[in-house]
Image (cartoon, rainbow, N blue to C red):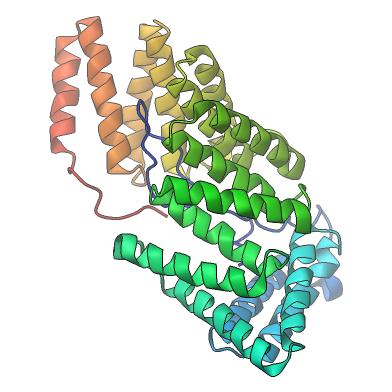
Length: 371
């Protein structure tokens, strides 16, 4: 889908572990449409929120029609969704532009000769169905099948179609979350090139594909490449959403993770502090990444020899984990282990035993995936 609500949110699709520290929890590939300007009213004094909600419903209907191979109905629903948004966002908004290109691509499929049209519609329907029905609990087999559907779609429609770019960005996110790093790097790199060609760099798919490339390269131990890609993603998101916004916070989080693994702990400290500032407004909706930023900061301070400052961060972090249900168990276990190491270093026996007892009470595996 093109839109996912009204505020930039993070969807946790899996913990990306690194050699030294847990990696970033992945963010949505496409941030939402910008709200109407203050005081701006929708046509007929309608509530802008209601208009966006209606547009999302229509867009969802379009995708449902695609799973059934009902191309004319899918086109009509997507056109109607875009018509809802255009008066509020303008024709130049990335979401409106992308939807318009998607409508154009679907209309071009509709105009193909019968045999080619049937092959294209079938490939698109199989992809839509597979993406809709995919369950991470299916493991590698389910993700492999989804990748095969994406490959067929890309071979059928080609790299000049925005429809294949949309499929690839979704697949790359899932591959990265599942730590299929080499595959994710290839998929994200392909959609990055597609986005530049079809939509330009002023688009969330460009920024998000760079973020996925950075995470995949980090998982592969290519830390210098990961740092460059994360920095480019940060610049792109600053241009899209403004400085110190949650999408930028996610990029700072990646940079902190990368610099910890590069053992540049002073840079990791700065990036962690920037991440905390940028993610503060969304910490209730996204406690996992906020906790991860605090964990990176505590770890960097400890490595820099600022042990008392690190202890304060760990105390605050443990309290935050108590307050928030959305911090994954794997992350909390990592936090406790590192806090125990610091308390050993400080010779604080009483606190160390308390945290060890806490660690022993934590489940050994996460029962659910936080989203």
